Image 1 (cartoon, rainbow, N blue to C red):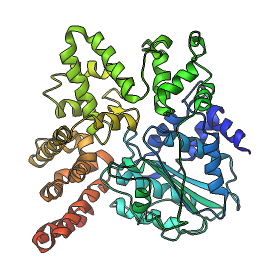
Image 2 (image 1 turned 30 degrees about the vertical axis):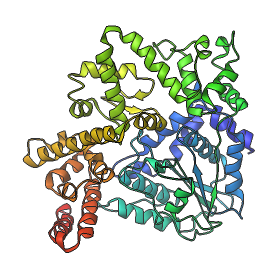
Image 3 (image 1 turned 90 degrees about the vertical axis):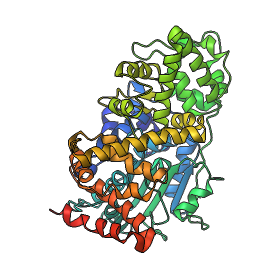
Image 4 (image 1 turned 60 degrees about the vertical axis):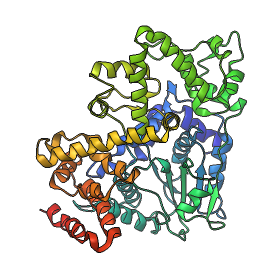
Length: 516
């Protein structure tokens, strides 16, 4: 099947067929003690869209061809990196590419066994256990096996299983392609040189995607982290912004929804100028020009003529329009809206209503104020706070609002998360909080916040308690998450040496307890 046919399948194909592809890409994840397959399927559905409402995507024919060329060139380096700023379209590109690859043979020398995993704050797939349990399970499925690590499997054991599979030749021939998207969104762990084989076996190809981190000088920083800095170890695949034809292609793939509005101005040219080729901004402007359910469009074509290019100008106008709507309630609304935006920018995963109210009681006196703030920002922050937590619809938005804060403000917001974790832990230990009632966000992400803020070792040691263990067991049905936190405490104690011998012994005693 040629590239054009593959793209047609991915972008505008039969929705039933595409649903089958997304399910196939998550086979194996449904056999884990805690299932993560629906999270990955939701991620793919967001970037692919539905047959009658495809997600904005286009102008990437040459980029898809470049990925194919790297994969099919036997002389190409076994590893590849796709490093680009947030919002450039990395996730959309890889999501469409892996669905295109589904049309390839499943057996024989030409087969490509795709092991795809997106690491995402929004879709709650950024914890170490989630990532490596999923990768191990997916690899096992490719090899016709199942992951049965036992009741006490933690992230390190799953990592070991994943690493072992990477070196094994596929039983049905062909090659194994590992696609890891969003390495920069990892929470509480980092990708390093131990992630993939130093010398890749002939059957293995790996591509990772990430945005550059705060102190990175250029894309080579990720190559150094992964141990891919040697010549011919990894191919750098670039991803430029969209050109004018690319913007036109995006709208074409969506069915030209703005055609009825293009009566006074050249919308294609204006969208290109305002977005500066940024796919995320194209999406934001298209969505703002169209009604969303019962919510009217927030922009008209005439508005576009008055705007300046870039994300900063987009949000400046949005705030100005919101403040007009708030009227006399402006000070209160402004406080709650900014509070919700800042909390989500500092969070490592989706926040439920109870989380927000506990984290910022000085800002949200009741859930009614929170509901109003969430309604004001519902084009950028999704979730209802009940069935699904509040989270930015795209990591670029979180990056933007976090970047507006000073260092002191960032520390103040982080301090709220740390105190929330300490209060939860105290309640569990005092038995004033039942494990089944412990906030899921705290159980999953408190240790990651500790690691992110370089907290005191005593905070890590405090996690080694029965209350924390039982909370993890209530949440996920296994103590795997507790074991990961215990491993963090062990590493801290080991670094302190003989002075922390008691803590080392305490951590070492955890395993017999877990086997009871």
